[in-house]
Length: 245
Image (tube, rainbow, N blue to C red):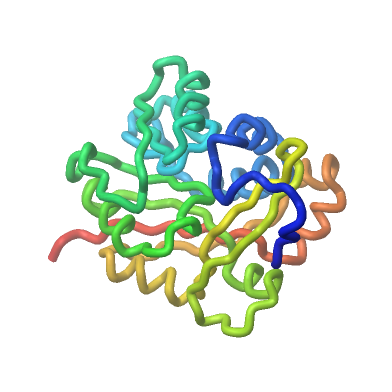
């Protein structure tokens, strides 16, 4: 999708500028609250007493749910504003750090987490090899990686691209986060690139889930319900760290 360069926008991926609006909206909107999160929770095992990394915590909705279910949570995000919002939400019930997933997570120890959860974050990274190897390093043997991302086929159609098998940078504009539209950039890649990156990093894919909207979505957001019922906007992958042979 091309942007209207005559219109005023928040600069590309300026998370600090719209962090509060994003955190507030995603608490109860159709795509997050009644589509992505219910599907993620449907495949998440019991987290009681489990050590969980919330990788790309945004405003802390997942982190709060995890600590409310007795998990030991470490949350990270590239945005300082998102980190502060998560700290406010958790009220010292977890550890929250500013960190860039495109760089090594050197402050996290090997084999120290039971679960890595990452919600709608990995599509902002061009290279999945580095971050997946880091997730593999910090997970215990048999540990769980659960993440959601943009559905590759939906982005292929929506942005009217020519080559489904290319990994390419996309520009988009988000409305509804204040008076000024938000400019975002993220990467679209084919499903085969996702699965091969996971395999190469030492993960076994347990489940690939294409979510469906909930009945609450139908009641609260009937137009979005119809769209999400027939078009695959997000993709969820449940993978396990393979034991070393």
